[in-house]
Length: 129
Image (cartoon, rainbow, N blue to C red):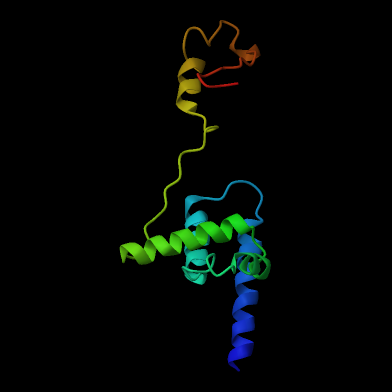
């Protein structure tokens, strides 16, 4: 019975990574934390030293770099002797501050006497390429 349970756990872990990590678009910080917490929970700290990283990569269906980082995260948790610390990611660079556009749209420069036929104006912010 333990062998069936172990196999079922591995299948569940593989489908978890396959469903979450294969989503289109960006993952939220909560999704990323769920992924790294799950990988860290599955990885023994000495997995890479024992040359098991490639096997874990094949079994779970994730890239070897993901396994390596998961082992590093697990080792860090064990080293510091504390629970999970929420990972924070930097803000995405393509976020738009709509307040700037709204202010311009209602300014004298953005408003003309003929408000019915406004032409769209491209606004370039510092850092745009």
